[in-house]
Image (cartoon, rainbow, N blue to C red; front, top):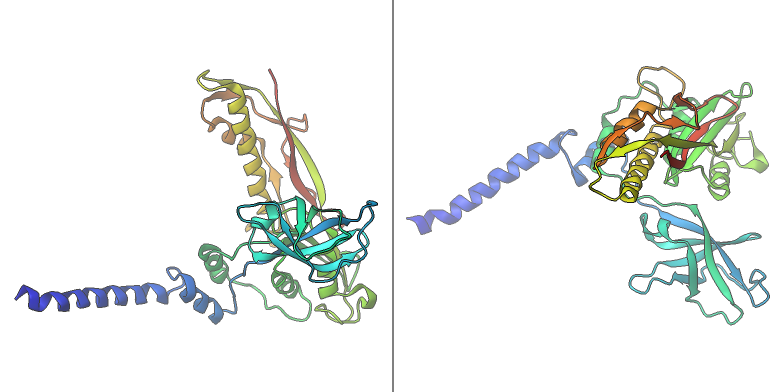
Length: 345
């Protein structure tokens, strides 16, 4: 009897599990993967795809001058023997060569240094990556996509309103965050402040790319980009607000002090990185206007949670005993950057 019913019982169990999974994947709150993508399409929201890193490279001849026989699609590779990153030429500029990584995702964001030619070139003497011009990002996670699907939109993207510009910028994969300032210099003027996928001020390459897509500079205001006719769009990077953190700590003496200091620096750096994720968001308690503050109390909470720290003074910011609020207005938009962490004896 057992042998007769065991296969049927197994199939009934699998069918029951499949039915339970079907119910779970039906709702946005519990769906995952492809099912969550389908839920997003019903709301007009698509998962952000992984992008390619673009870098600026210095490619010179024996005289130290930029090589003049580089061609589009010439290939280079990093000097990582285990798993090299491959690049190809997408643009030749006066200040170097713009390369794009072959692989999707953020791994190429971390490589700066010498590269080797894959395409033979007898005139090449030296080649190196000098700058990550447009950092890449990984594919959007389920949690991030679900949050965007469930977020209610109060207005319809239409005719150059703020929601319309949000949609334009969300469609540019190389943008990590942005701020929009409508009518910043009167009617028909719009300022866009851009961060890259690493939440750092956008490079000139990315700013030019966004400007050309939304409002080409040679035909500004004429509607040849995504911006409506009559809109003059300015695309800039934020001003950097360097912040030095100073504090005095007490330890339990178990771990070397230098190790503890390094852990504190890492924790404070993570705090600044987290704060930049809110840089382009309008707080829920405000209808309009961006706001971001570096709080001394939150830094203190971070410090005392580090292992082997028994006590700490309330940190000062740029040698001032005050929190620092970023300035966001039509003229200036600040981005907080950790400059250094100083320990008093």
